[in-house]
Image 1 (cartoon, rainbow, N blue to C red):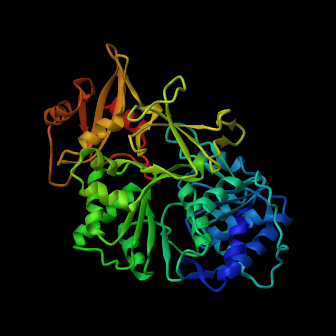
Image 2 (cartoon, rainbow, N blue to C red):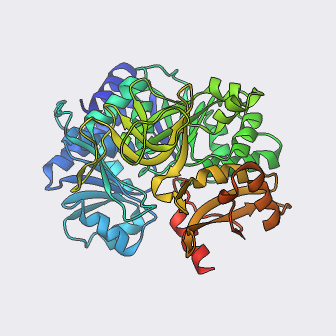
Image 3 (cartoon, rainbow, N blue to C red):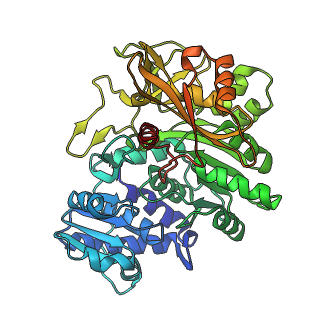
Length: 501
C-alpha cells in the first residue's frame, strides 16, 4: 500500500480530467502525477528525511503529498497560524527536511538548521517544469512506512505528532470510496486547513474518486459561497463554526443560489442542533452527512448519513429526533465499543469512553509509541454512548468530565439542553474547583443577536430538564466562545477565563 497507488490509478484512468483548482492554477491528474515525480526526485536527491508544508491550501499541497509518498518520506503539514517558539519546536522535530511555505516566510525560516526552504510558487514551478528530472515509476509498497505526520491541535496540551502510515489512510480510502465514482463535472470544495486530517483525507478520496478539488485558502462565508457558485461545486466539507457562518449569511441574503450543491458534509466539532436544522431548510437539495473521526484514525469512523438526517428532522419520536445530534453509525470496517473506567464493555445508552478498532486506526505518536491495546482497540479519550440501534453520541473529551460530589457529569449533555433555549446561540460548560463538592458546574453562553436571557431563567431551564446537580451554579455571558481553527471548542481557555473572572 502507498498513497501513490491512488494517484497512479487516477492518472492512468482520468489523466486529462482536472484534478485541482487553486486560485488561477489548474492541474489535471496527468499533470499532478508528473509534478509529483519531479518534486520527489528533488526530495530524494537531498538529505531531507521529511517534506513539510507551512502554508494555506494551494496546488502545491497535493503535489507535495504525493511527492513525499513517491520518495518514501513522511509528509508533514504544519499549522501556519503558529508563530515563534511553538513553530520552531515543531520544525525541529522534522529536520533534516524540505519545507514549502509562503514567500513572506522564506527568508526568516531559511536560517534554521537542517531545513531546505522553498517558496510555494518556486516549489510548484520546479515541479511543473517539463525539463526537470523525475523518478522512475516505482515506489515502496511497504504498508508500514509513514505517510503523514499530523500534529494534533493541542486543545488539552502540547501538540503531538500522530503517525499515519500508508496502510491506515489507504485502507480508509479503499473501504469508503469507489474508484472513478465521480462524474467529470463533480467538484469538492475544500476549505479545511492542510494540517487537519479532513484536509488530507479530502485529497486522497477526491483523487481516487476522480472529483475535482477546489481549494479555498482562507475561509469566509462570502468567499465560500462565491467560489462554490463559480466552480459549480457539488460536494463540500465544513466544520461547525464554518457552517454556522454560512447559514447566517445565506439567511441575510435570502437564499444560497447553489443549484449544483448536492452533498454537504460536516464534522470536527460539536454541531448545534439549531444550526443543522436551519441548514437543512436553506439547502433542501443537498444531502447532509455528519462525519466523526480523529487524527489518529485517518479520518472518518462513523457517519450520520442523508437518510438519517431526513428521518430525524421529520420524526415526532424523541429518540429518532435526538439522532440529529449524533454522529451516526460506525463504518462497516470499524468496530466501536463503549467502556467504563475499568475497561469493561457497556451496553446501549450507557455512557463511557469510546474505543475503536479497524485497519485505518493508527493510535500511534512519534517518539511516544502506540496507544492501541492488545485487543486492537484504541481508546479515543472521547466520552459517549451507543443507542439501541447503534447510533453513536459524542459527549466531549473524557478529560472534560465534571466530577461533582462523586457524580460524573457530561458537559455536552448540559450544553445540548442550553442550546435548546431560543435565546442562546452557543454554550460551553466546564467544572471549576469547589471546596464542598470538588467541582462546580459553570457555563459560558452566547446569546443570539437581539435576544437575551437571565441567569435565573437559564438555571430553571436546565433544572426542568436535568437533575439539579447538573444545573450550572453561575453563567457568564460572552460575545463569542473560543474555538480553534478546526472548529473545536478550546475548553482550557473557557476554564481559564472563568477562573480569572
